[in-house]
Structure formats: C-alpha cells, structure tokens
Amino acid sequence: MKKQNLVIWFVLVTILLSVSSILAQGNKMDMKPMPKDDMKMSDMSKTPHHVLMMAYHHNALAFTRVLLDMTSDGKIENVDLARAAFAEIKRSMDKMEEIQKSHMSSMGKMDAAMTEKMKPMMDKMDAEKAALKGHVLALEKALQANAPNASDVEMHAAVLLVKFEKMNMPEKKMEM
Image 1: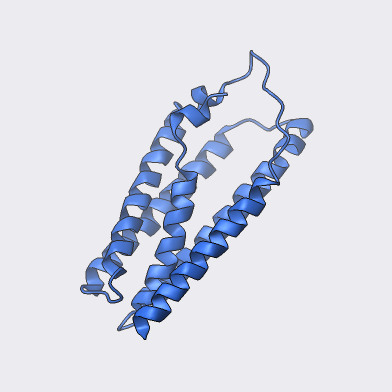
Image 2: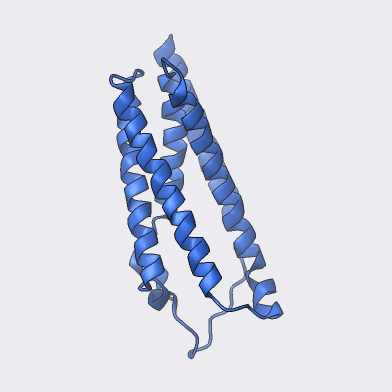
C-alpha cells in the first residue's frame, strides 16, 4: 500500500511538473539580440562569480541525487547520512545566494530602462528561488523528525532535482 501511494505521488508530481513546464514555455520573454558591443552570455558564464556559483550548483545537484537515491526504496536506511546530504544541499544553496548577492552589490546601479527590461526575468528568478526555498524548508522539517517519512523526503528531493537540472544550462545554450 505504501509503495502504491509513493508511486501515485511520484506520477502526480511528474505530471504536474510536466504540465507546468509546458505552460511556462508559452510565457517566454521577447528578447531582442544584444548589440555587438555588449557582453555576450558566453562571456558572462566565464566570470568568477558565475563559475563559483555553478560549482555550488553542481554540488547541490549531486547531493540532491544522493538524497533521492537514499529514499528510492521507500525507507531511509541511515537518517544521519540523509541529514548530512541535506546539510550539503542547504549549504550549497546558501553559498549560491551569498555569491549572487555579492555579485549584485558589486554591479553598478542600472539605469531605469535596463531595470525595466530585466524586471520580468528577475521576477521569474525570484519566484523560482522562492519555490526552491519552500522545498528546502519542507525537506528540513521532514528530516528533523525522529523517524523521517521517506516518501515526503523523496517527493521534495525529486522536485529539487528537477529544478536543479532545469537550471543546469550547457555552455551551448549560453551562447547567442
């Protein structure tokens, strides 16, 4: 019965994520090509901030996979190891946020036109960040229990994994 519930939850989450990604594709921003003298996206991906942030991103992705694998059979064999994996996910996300804040503070004040142009993208990033934080908080709460519910941990880890993989952009996508 527990395995059936787990499979049903997993299928529902997968369907929900698939439908939401299909619907989100219709809301793409109307981006105009950047002038030749502006920074290219591929150049931005080589900045120290971006490189370090991506290292923490890959770290969070790897530990999320580990946590998901630990719960894939419907139980958590070693709760302490699951908590350690979660601690690394959380630490990596905190470091990514710290780097992003540092980078934003080091940038000069943007003019009103650029701020307005970037507002939809920044709003989308803030919404995605809030969703990630919600799942991290749910994972933290689930893992704080004496006997964590493996299906709850698995569900939130699966959603985090999908979101981290979605954020994982190959270098070819970065070039315009």
